[in-house]
Length: 374
Image 1 (cartoon, rainbow, N blue to C red):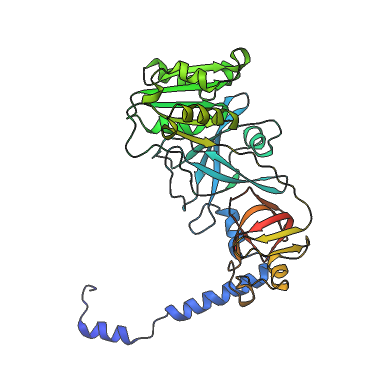
Image 2 (tube, rainbow, N blue to C red; image 1 turned 90 degrees about the vertical axis):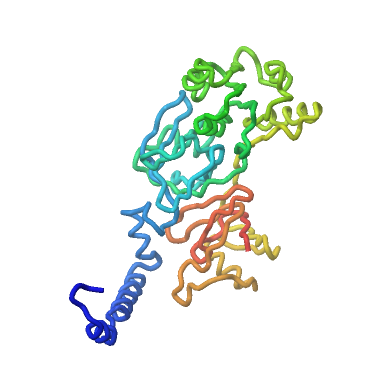
């Protein structure tokens, strides 16, 4: 109760008309006028230019720093937007990176320590020959760059009941999720890490890993393939005589993982092996293409000028939409695979199989074969 107030004052105040509704109505009218003036963009699109990490916006991150790790690898420090929900060590995030007008999505493991005072996270990227996104991030990304960000995902994490003895087998950039675990799980006291790289200088986090080995925190086995050849399952087992007693976590090239799975399976240890695969992404883009709706199984041919929403409705596919009633984003659906072009600015958005990148079907046209989750 306000100081000096009484019941009579409170009653008379309650009976007065509140200004809330007129103000809200005025605000709504102003927003509608703004939307008409900025069509096909929304006023929030302009707000995003100056406050891309704001609460309520699509999740993004700003590059705060780029730290060189090796000649072809770098750690990218990211400040996530306010919608970021955190991660479990070993998980990955998907970044949407604009390269030459094309938005490309790639997945990278989170390598930072949890609970940093600055609220930032980091990913570590190894540039691969011909890799558009990895080379762009490692060699051409500057602090201040804003990227699209998905929430953390993935099951390549330690179990709640930590293993008494752990073995990590990695090659190349496969070390990245494991480094996320090592940095955040000091309770692991009996750890062997077997890592493969072309040379000693090519070992990502080499200095940090060797320092951990120097303190006795881990036992580190490095295999440099330029002189010792490729790491195989038999060599791993030879380096680790008590492998049957260890929970094994492996990440690296598919061929290495398949060899480990076969060897562990033959030894009756398949349930002790946990793997994480990094898949390559190869997409063919163009003007128009076949649109498949994964839920109904409907398929249609669409040109590169007609929004997917319109093309689908013309083909008799019932689509979610509130666009014609002034309700924006009612038509948003996950792009599971393929590529679409934003008709407002010409930008491409791509998705690897199963990704589920959200797109607005009212302003997106097929840019090659694509699959929409609907």
